[in-house]
Length: 425
Ligand code: HSE
Image (cartoon, rainbow, N blue to C red):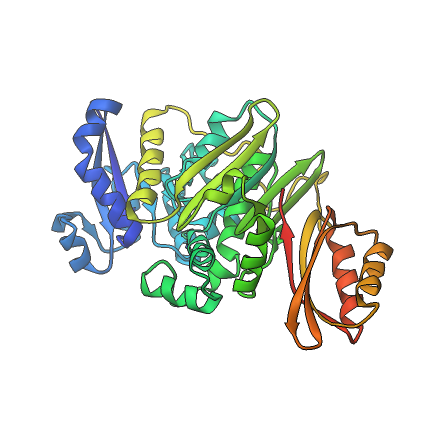
């Protein structure tokens, strides 16, 4: 039986999960895949951690050279995170002709062109299913399952931390800070939650997924990004009354040569398939020209779900003679004929605090009219003596028109926008 040697760089949560899956299921893979996957080496500075996982002393390497120049190692798994050391290690491994499997979204989003060039030169593989949406096989689906399609749109909940926070806010009426503190106490959110709540994590993932879906490099700098730290319990309650659920969404669309990529909180109709993706679950909804709509759902993080994606990549590499690379020109920038849409179209939910005076509503409506923004729904309620809360939902319109209209309204002394959220369809 073919034997394939694996090395793991980093035995943190994901590396530990990968080690466990590979060792506990070795016999299962021998039977079902006809390949013997053997962990030949691990690079982990904390030797105690490696020993506690059951790694034999002699398999704990003390530097990268020991791993990549080990002739028994065929596949190197990079799960150390961060960018600089990871980039150097991955390049060293690829240049030595080893196939690399990584979960590092920032590395792949920023350097996939450089890494893939090195991989192709050496006829080595470069696989990164675990970099996006943990255990959910969305990259394999894009590369294989729906390759027959032109993908026209993708919409996903691709960050578990923010989905957990928004789910708790919706279910328990918690404020953002309260829900975040709870998520941190339970280990769902990092002590520094910036990467998740400000949308950086989702932006890296979206840049990778959109590149694969739309067959052109989508640099992360082209992703419009807005965090969720200003979302309030009041917005969520208002949305609920109007038939919406608030989610942190990653949205990608390709129309001709126009590509639109954005990450922000947005309301979704309650009957949208993504609206019922709750807690720390992730999902990606794709639309293809032949298949129509499909949705993948599952765990986007965690030792075993992410380890599942890594080991599936290892199995793919170990059982395929030819490597599968990107299905687009993997360069640092998008193809020349691609333009990125910044003035995208969406419907909007706008909450204003207004003075309870004659003519206020008509003056606000007039600003909307002048900006060619059509109002779909208006509700109002008493806020405090002399002031009202006004909620306006628009028909689909342009982002820049809404920003300009809100700036005009804010300049009037009787109204102030308290919340601007997009409504996705
Ligand atoms: N921090 C990410 C999340 C997991 O909350 O989904 C890894 O990408």
